[in-house]
Image (cartoon, rainbow, N blue to C red):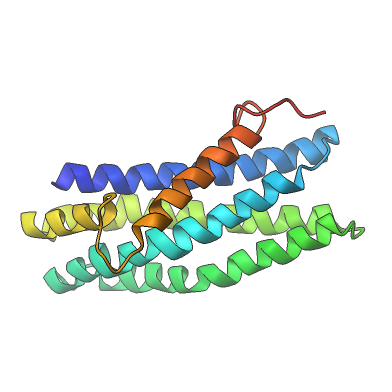
Length: 195
């Protein structure tokens, strides 16, 4: 079950990284090629960042992966505390993205600059966050967690996870990710080319 649980966590990280990469790409296109902003796509991407990591992925990490590791060893306490703080700060970072995108859409003179800065800050933070999880926390988890722990973690992250988490949200996030891919132009998606 270890490999199954880790595969799900890493797959979720890849989905999150893809949306963050897509945001960075779209901003670069707007800044360097004066691409017309697709606010519907940008709002969908921000909504995904709010719905998926903030309401689904991070709570499961806290309740299962971090909690089990904290029970098994104190070796990870400092890392877990740091990651949990980043999880709790996440809603504020998403709110910053929303405000910056709102200013940009309202045609504020510095709207693109503020939105670009907010995306870069968020992207840098989430990339570092996932790197700590994958390069520091997961090796500690592999070292200290039991087979039973991994079964529980895998079940929580799978489609039929813990009943405390809404399985419909899982489906909504997957549907939203698919919508983003369909709206976004190549190379980040399969949607129509932007002018």
